[in-house]
Image (tube, rainbow, N blue to C red; front, side, top):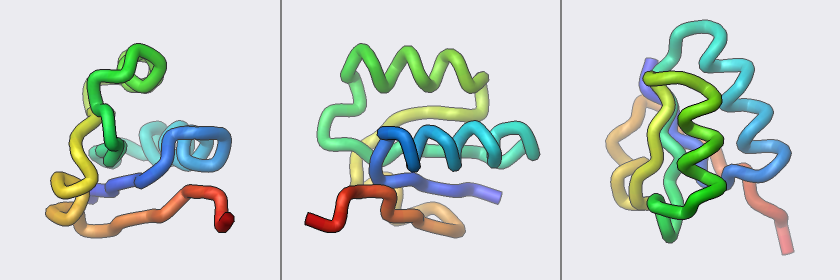
Length: 70
């Protein structure tokens, strides 16, 4: 399953870790996909985890919003 996560903090990162262990393709939708911390997280989680724009996330089977409410 293709899962997009908007937000790569504690919640988004935790969800990605769990889903990546179950062989899902994960895309972090971000304002700056080239951010060094985000790229490091993607490398840590494996080859099926990538970063792209928020617009790229729209093509996923599931889109999760993992951002602070405020």
